[in-house]
Image (cartoon, rainbow, N blue to C red; front, side):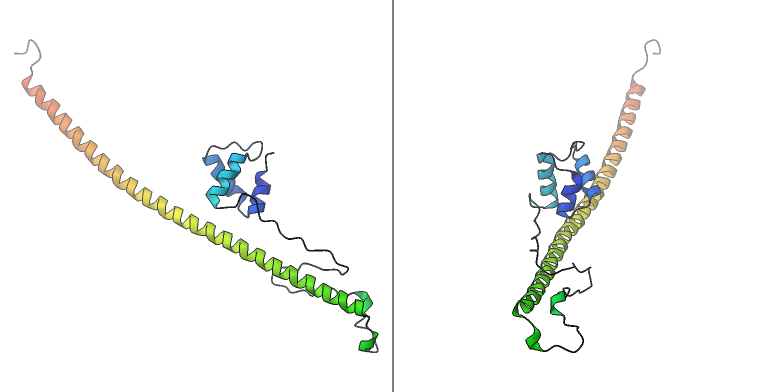
Length: 184
């Protein structure tokens, strides 16, 4: 079954337009989605694994957890049953063991989510660094090819100009010794 360019690009963290332009330049028809050949070619070209790395789902718990936005640190929402903010300052003996277990579980979920997100960010940064290195290397190779092409083109133009001069001179020389019939 064909995969959409959008889902492939999103799953592998590459820009859809970059993948589209590269596929078109290679002659792939993606009007009906990405064929297996197109996926393999993209994966090879961009150094991707065939299957995107699935993010580990966070197991549901009895507490409410909000994924923090980048740069923000959010603590798990306090279960209402703990009543930590009640007036009168409850004593430790007021807490039930299951309340403490739920709180600790919520903290564990938070820590796991933060660690998972950090790993995801690191993987994304590594993929981007690898892509940036490939782009930089390709730009250098294209510049070198362009410089070499320009030098070769200039040399070929000079050679052709010299050969044109030699041909013209040779043909002119031949014209001096050959008289048209009836001119002699």
